[in-house]
Length: 150
Ligand SMILES: [Zn+2]
Image (cartoon, rainbow, N blue to C red):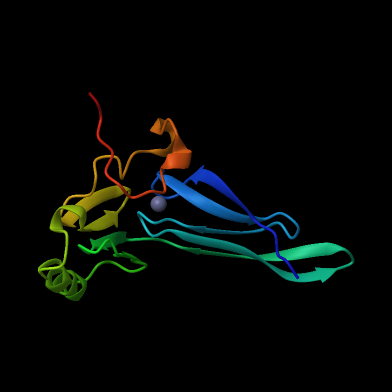
């Protein structure tokens, strides 16, 4: 069976940045995972009785993300569903200090009470642009640093 879904570009309910919502239009189930603050939401079908569908909703708040870019182009993204601990920071620092890491493109970002705090490195300037300020959101999922010209 093919489960058809469409990707909606919406503002993250927690940080207001662009996020992709995976929406299964036949069952009206949906999933949201924010790459920036780490917010997670899912709505899944629980039961059907007398033609009525009962849904189960799950929401997990996010505490930030890390992006680690390697010189060969690979990148590793992590989102945090718990407050970033000292151990997380130490572990990231070890990876960040490796010779094959592109430090200027790698960062560890904490999300706390609606604010982003850069713990290590610097995210690209448009990384945290609010959804409503993005002129061409379809371009947004690329992680490349965009330069404002000329
Ligand atoms: Zn978010």
